[in-house]
Amino acid sequence: MENQDLEVFDDGEFNNDSPRKRPAFITVLAILSWIYVAIGVLGALVNSFSSEEKQIEQIDQAIAIYDDMDEMPLLDDSIAALEASKDNLRITNLGNLIFLLIEGIAVFLMFNLKRNGFWLYTLAQIGLVSLLIMVMPWPNIISTLTVVFTLFLVLLFEILYAVNLKHMKT
Image (cartoon, rainbow, N blue to C red; front, side, top):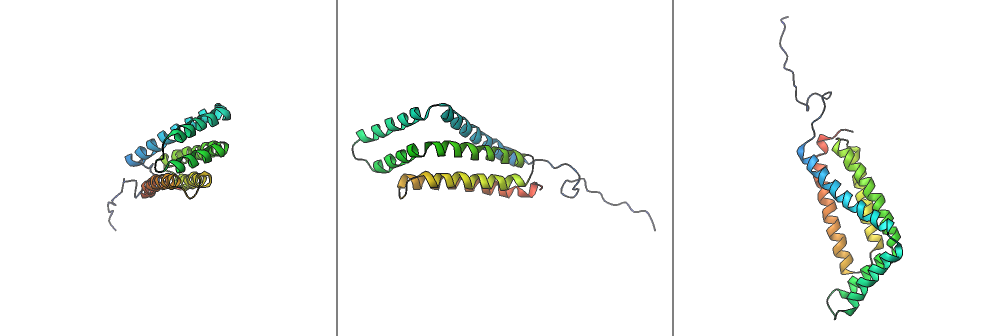
């Protein structure tokens, strides 16, 4: 038999031993997610270091401003949402901090093309939305709008990350 030249693929899709290149889109998604996590964690840390009484006082001031307003649509729902946030202040602060830190770790894993990061990210998003649903008053139009907007953003990023699962390894 003659020696035949075999075609060698240098592309990462065919050679599983070569290091994978991170797509630019995953980098952009990760940066956007880290900005969100950083803002959320900073907010949670500021809330953790300020006294609970001061936070309750600020919420009471906002409620007083709403009480001084004439009858407006959604005013009662806004006051109910503020009252619920005051009643669940400690749970909300701690839950947000925990789930945002988990989300930051998950985004780091996905940035390094680890598929497990996507599942951890999904669990963190479910936790954040569940926390929001648990502490908001129902039925309430403000609560409904807040949850719908949050779900829209969560599903958008879930879909965008899921489209890039093909680039991630276990």
